[in-house]
Structures are given as structure tokens and as C-alpha cells.
Length: 255
Image 1 (cartoon, helix red, strand yellow):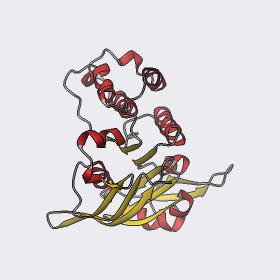
Image 2 (cartoon, rainbow, N blue to C red):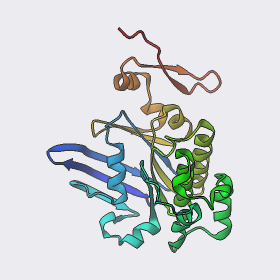
Image 3 (spheres, one colour):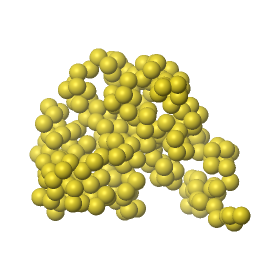
């Protein structure tokens, strides 16, 4: 199997500040991989490097066994899609114009697949509304639809569920998981550790720009690891039905 992404000794330095240091991992077709870690760990910076938005200071990024830097902009768009954390509303552009932007790529989804995506995300009623008049959650669903319609083999998403309610968060992750089961790959920065445990095949744990672990959720999110990262602000308990970990905020007395 040809890996989708291979990242080798990747580092990124901004000024004199190292934001990423010696990151090494690989993603295979069919995998949904989560990037987790405290605020400022380097999750967004890593995704920007992998998307080609910024250039690493050191190391290599191979996309389907070719250097990412060797792809033209159009070739990259055919293989790779990216949903950043903050997407500014595009003036008064209609939703239908935004989501069909990805349709101009040669590998874009078919008409029937586009209709399915629109229906799944419940945005048909939004198609003729200006994007900048929608709520944050509605905008996020529109941008997610655009990413899916681009139909790239590898999808990069930076906290795509941050502005969604729990129902739409579950919907988005289930749709993303379905596309991975069909042979695509996804790398998603995510803060909700319970969601990461439920949906991700493997987790990349970052702290202060360094790679702490890359393995299955059960091996990465151990009670010891979570306590080291978040001190005693969370509790880790087994789920009563499947014994998977549940991570909960811990109520404490502030002095």
C-alpha cells in the first residue's frame, strides 16, 4: 500500500521560535487520523505545512511518494483538500457559489455525489443565502461541503467541529469516517478527546511543537499521558459498555 502522506523530520521555525520540531509519521489510505494536544501545541502549524500554505524549515513531506513541493497548485488541489480553522465569510457570495468552487477541479464529485453531500449536511435550504449572513455552524457545514465536493484523496481539517452543536459534530465526523472507509485519508485537528477516541484510527499527540506519541487512541490517551498534559483538570474513567476511556472535566475549588 502506498502511503498517502509521509512526514520525515519536519520542523518549522518562526523567527527564532521553533513551532514544530522533528515530526515523523505516515498516513495510509482509509485512515482517519486525529491531531491532539493542548493549545499552542502546533496542530494548526502542522496542517499549514502539510497543505503547502507554509514551507517547513527542515524535513520532508511526501504526498503519494512524491515531494509535496513538486506538485503544481492544480495538481495539489486534485490530491489534497484543506479546511483551515478560521475561514472568513466571502463577502456576499451565495452558498451555492462557495460550495461549487471545488467542482471546478478535474477530480470533483459527480452531480449525484454533490446532491448527496448537500442533503447529508442539510444545507439545501442555505444554497441561495449569502454566506456572511449564516451562523458560524452553518458556515462551517458549507465549507465542509466544499471540501468534500473537491473530492481529493487526502483531506486536512483544522478543528472543523469547533462551532458545531453535538448533533452536527457527530454528523460531520460520521460523514468524514465514511469517506475514509471508501479509501480516502483524513487528518483532523481536534480538541474533544472523547470524539477523537470514538472516530479516529490513530492519534498524533503534540506538545510544545514536539511529537509525543503516534498510535491508536487506546495507546496514546492513557490516564498517565492525559494527566501529564492536562494536570489534574480532567478525570479519566472507563465507559461502562465498551470500556473505552471517557475523559471529563473535573470540578475543582478555585482559591
